[in-house]
Length: 176
Image (cartoon, rainbow, N blue to C red; front, top):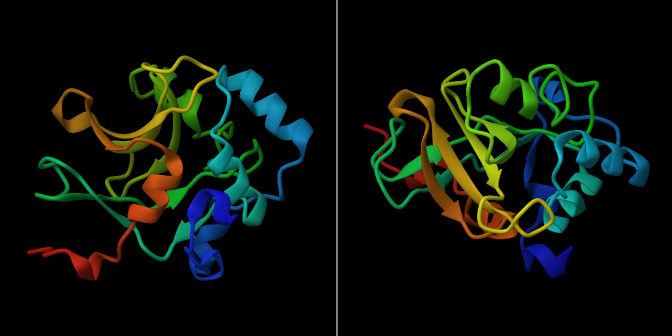
């Protein structure tokens, strides 16, 4: 794990709230990962797969990521509710009934990659792996997509590991 996340304490990364079970699935097998990647049309980042092998989705304790510009959520950050696991069974899993393809096909989110984290806005903004610059087999950046302002895309991190390390508690931000 240290190859992706440095000294981040992954034992203290996840919140054990019971609502987290709507995201958390069984540990993904190589076969499941391959089938979800084939269904979505993108190779998932190695750091994301590594984290999902420790806990397959859920709610992180630190839910705020600094943003370079104002969002509809705040002047200086975005918030996330949960990170989707690899699978199909949980509603909030990558290939679940409200997963990445649903967001593109039913909600009109741009087809830029894989939507992997939702925000407290109940679907009006999402966090995604953006494959536009790297292609479906490359290392995607992590972006915030805001439906409320024409699906504006804001880059949050150059890769998933950097995004995870950037997450902060909401107490680090002025929420007034």
